[in-house]
Length: 166
Image (tube, rainbow, N blue to C red; front, side):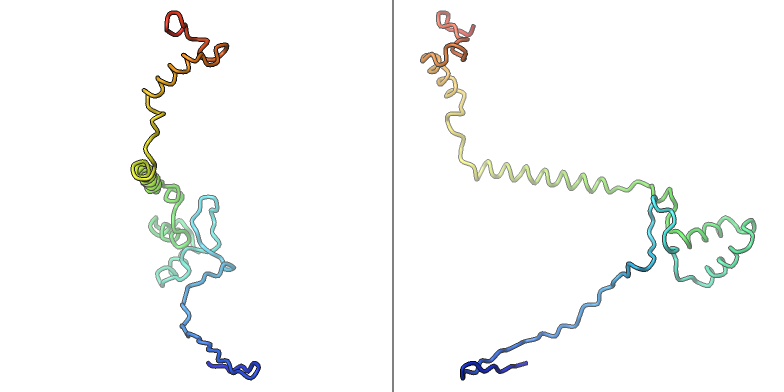
């Protein structure tokens, strides 16, 4: 589509390029409609598990309207499965999700350790010589020789006559 605009005698061409992309079809869920979910804290979902019933399911539903004593155990279970997907023990059953979570935690801890090691080797400068034990002992000896803070400091705890700590 091309449009012509006249400004002060000049003709400016504006190119409007519209790329016609077919819209993607995405499945939308109507949240205003009743939904099914298995949750322990909500024992009765808004709708049954199976909405579309087969002929066998329809005949079983008709049989349900009669006396329940005539239903077999398998028919009762099938009727339950028409309304609910899982039983309470199935819903309460522990999953192995904790293994995935712990694996992810240990992976990221290990990766963090590798990054810290890499930084200490390749990024950070070497430790200053003032952190060496030899330097610290020489510094302590010099401070004792200068009698630094002799009232309450560590010079007060040094016996100068014996050359050892009190």
